[in-house]
Image (tube, rainbow, N blue to C red; front, side, top):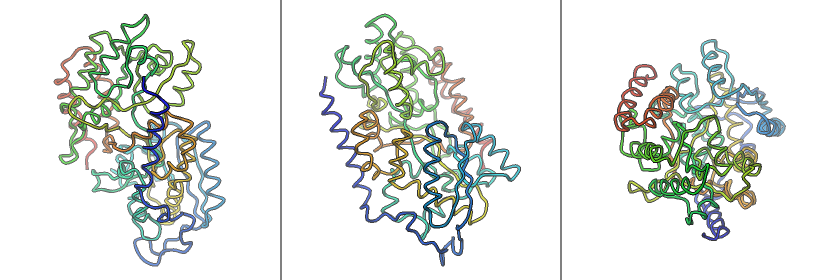
Amino acid sequence: MKNRALVFVLVLVLVLSIAPLAGAQGGFVATFSLPTTPAADGPLAGVDPSGQTVVYWHQHSGDRETALNEIIDEFNADNPWGITVQGSNQGSYNDIYQKMIAGIASGELPNLVVAYQNQSATYQLEDALTDMNIFVNDPQWGYNDDEKADFFQGFFMQDVNPQFGGARLGFPPNRSMEVLYVNLDGLAELGYDAPPTTWDEFKEMACAWTASGENRVGYTIRTDASFVAAATFALGGDIFDYENDAYVYNTEPTVYALQVMQDLIKDGCANRVAERYGDQNDFANSKNLFYIGSSSGMPFIASAIAESEAGEFEWTVAAIPYGDLGATTPTQNIYGASVSIPKSTPEEELAAWLFVRWMSEPEQQARWAEISKYFPVRASSATALADYLAEDPQFAAAFALLGNTRAEPPVAGYDVVRTMVEQETFFSILDGANVQSELDALTDAANEVYQTQFHQ
């Protein structure tokens, strides 16, 4: 087994090396140092955000909501424009989506709302959102080149929507990614010294674990659309052709990855998730060698392992297997809801942007990352996170994978397509249906829905 302390040091060096690439700290302008008087020219000339109230609909609860409220209180107390942000938990992502659809019809909308990219695209079918490029690029209220370069570019560009001519329909407050959770002690028991980098290695290890003892199975398959995207991205493909504005679920990378899943079931080296969080629990109880899911779940995995009756074990997170079809480096599926600004008055919209801009500063980003366990969106946050990264090697390992990322389609109707993937196609494939035929049919059906129901 490799020296894990050395592995962590190498990971930390990689993480901290990201920040200097973004530009000097001296190039950054603090939000509270921006002028308190309206711009004299430009698209926001004469717009005064002073004294505005910003109603912010979000999904955070528990400790995250408590921490967010503290951060909001700090902004309200210190911002020089007298802006007041009112945070409001409006339930789940889907609850908020349904309330936004109703609000678009009634005209009763918040000033800032959490939204996945496909949700914001659906809102924009009714021209309900402000194009945030007007703020990002404004000479007085926006970002300079150093600041723009400091964002992880995959995050920064994720809300620039090709369906609406490059309009920026949201802005990222944080992100997570699909990662491979690995039982390192389990690998060592089997004689392996590193996580798999190919699906062939993954299958070999999963089957070896299944054969190594009672009540063991290599992997529990979660029929999740984000996994399908993640496996496709890792192998060098995509599920959406942006040049031709169409879904492409039937290309070689997706076919290859789902054929692996079917083979694992056939060979008895994997099973299906039987209940919600069943795969997480089986990994935490040493029944599974691997688990694949969101990096934001790391705190829950750590807690479950610590409380497991099977005993604690050493674990880490790694890249989704990527090397089978020629890729030499991993490409990770990054995701997460952004915040969008519904149309209201120019003054309210600018006030909402100033809160978003302040929340996106490296200091606030580092603070929120420690609290929420989401990734910060700016590379220079790594400096402020150095102590935390040293204390949490799993988070550091995941953070080190942020260099090469891709995102799921930001187009309207992707939520409908996700359901098709999860409840129809993936189930049929695990039941033994021909993988290529199923993915051909999915591609046709997804494009039919997209073109007829969710297209401009």
